[in-house]
Image (tube, rainbow, N blue to C red; front, side):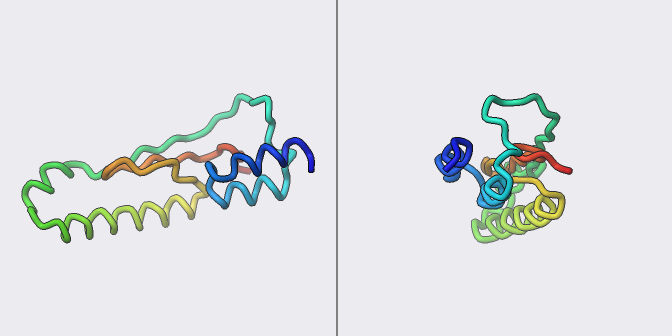
Length: 103
C-alpha cells in the first residue's frame, strides 16, 4: 500500500465517506505536504432561533423546525458537492473544495 493510501485510511474516520471514496479512487489528488487552494466555507444558522424557542415553548415543534432546516440544507450541500464539517446547535458549517478540489 502506498504511503498516501495509508494516511488516507488512517484519517478516514475523520472524513466524510464520500470524500474518502473520492480520494481512494485517485490518491494522487491529495498532496500530503499541503497546498494553497481556494475553498468556500459556509456557515448557516436559523436567524432569531433563540427568541423563537422562547416563544414556542414546545420542544417537539422546535426539533421539527431544526430538523426540517438541516434536511433542506443537506440537500443543497449534496447538490453542490459540499461536505458538512459540523453542526453547532442550530448552525451548520460546510466546506466546498477541500480536501478534494471541485472541477
